[in-house]
Image (cartoon, rainbow, N blue to C red; front, side, top):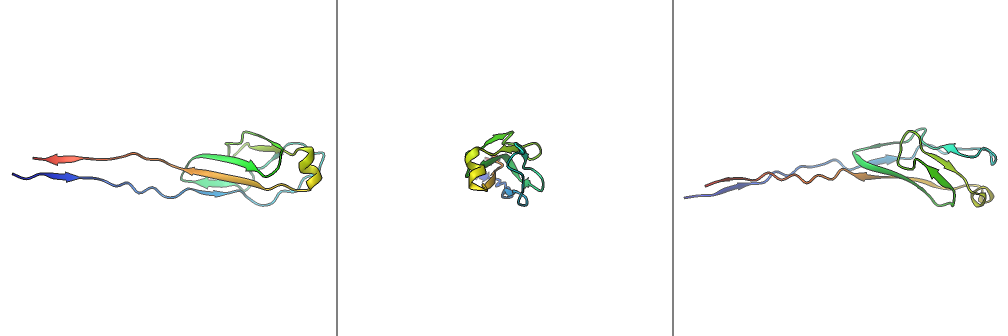
Length: 99
């Protein structure tokens, strides 16, 4: 009598995120499209954040996200925008038993 048990391990590539190149805009422009040149791979979600106090529209988009600088951002002269990607989570297990 014998028993065999197998398990499959699925290896998922790490996520990547590229926020794109610096953007220059006038202080009176208002909302700015921030997605030009940005991309991500192997992700389940992406999120734009900033070190400023402005607001985002569509902060979970690679194609239509915008940032509206606050008056404090405008006074400071710049903000740092960060694009974060969260990896794809897989819960896959294969069990095979032979008795």
